[in-house]
Length: 432
Ligand code: AMP
Ligand code: MG
Image (cartoon, rainbow, N blue to C red; front, side, top):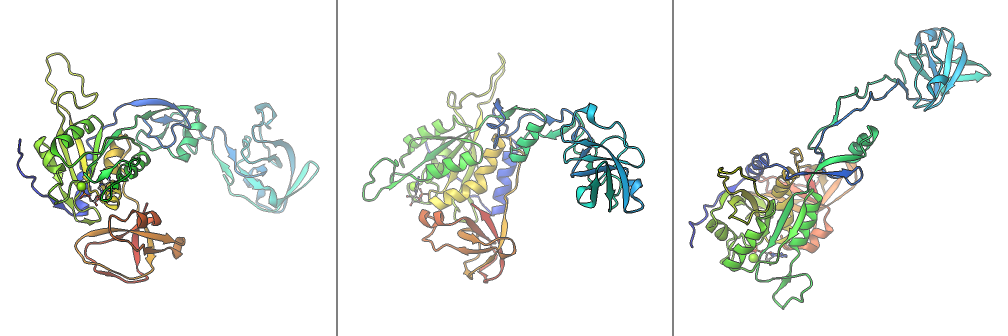
């Protein structure tokens, strides 16, 4: 069967990225699982987490010192009776029920400030002799005290669904007693690499063959973005076999292909997808590396789409449509286009709230001259910190050069209207 030729739609980087974000917004995670707190690190939260009590649960001293009535310190130095000592975790019965005029209580960081006291004077401003203490510095009301419930009220929401759980979020969940959490299932992302010249990592390549590296860089990127890679066999540049493997890939939640999307006679990915009735949202982006990147959606045939939707008897459920990205086969193009265009789709399937690309800024070490027209993401090395951050392109042989990219720790981003960037200019840098 021959399909109409694919209409070429080459978008600017911004428009291509927007298209991906708009489609990502329509995606949902495929389910939830209940995991223990440490297994939840890096996963996406599927339930809101609430404060089980006021935080802090009592007015908490933030210093070692003396709990005082701030008004008593109008005249300095001042001397007080020390009526008790309050350790962190002190039993309620051992905490003075009230601090009266002329009285203070010794108090430690993390201990509850007793009634009557409204501030804590740091121990550095005191001299204690037996049961008496002289204080040499005043405090304003509330100083060195976090009021009960100031960080969160009992029942208030602390963490929202869609948050990727980092160290602080895990700590917060621990602080409210959540030792298990509902997280979203990892989306399954199929990786289909194409090309007659590509052989498995364990095979001995013939003189004109190369080993498959893209499936591995993609698997790493998929894991890092919160997905589970499903590596398919290498597809030859032959339509029937390619189609069968694409159909296999469509059983996963997202299909990523590498290679076969350029203008070559044996670049068959778009043709085969077009024969399968695919809709293409773009067939190129004005970027380098990665210009031939393809994004679209295709209907899956019966039995090829994994779990699918359960239909009530008598209801017609249209076959599900799955998203695919055809990433250019050059290894650096594959890595860059994953970060720019595949990641938002994967994150949405993982249940994560949309997030923007993160760029750093650094001073360019050596001048760059370049042909304008494309937004470039060129492998580079970032050194130094803060105001002294510097960045320099790695010497490379183009977007097939994995060795150069392995030496890089970032990409310099060059806007499409620039033909020259002078040494010392601040440039945007995408970490890798
Ligand atoms: P293509 O996009 O199919 O024209 O491939 C572009 C270049 O990337 C060619 O030099 C391919 O040999 C190379 N390439 C394609 N797929 C892979 C892969 N899986 N691993 C490493 N290199 C690849
Ligand atoms: Mg190829």
